Length: 72
Image (cartoon, rainbow, N blue to C red):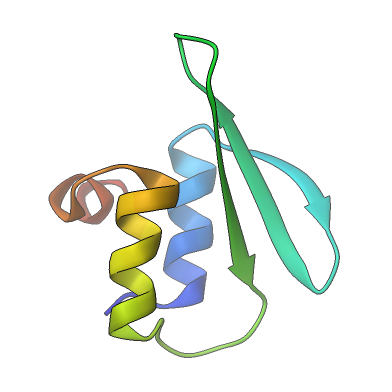
């Protein structure tokens, strides 16, 4: 499973905008069709729990794991 740091790196490399920096990093990405994807990245250390990671990939990032791995 990836770490929170790797998720942050993915967002930065994939063109996501950091729009809020509090106890978490909040990123968003405007899509060509006008929709907006959003995700929240913990400032904690360690790996993202497997079940949460699968949900982040599917619902927030909306990318395949292979694409994520290529970008980090």
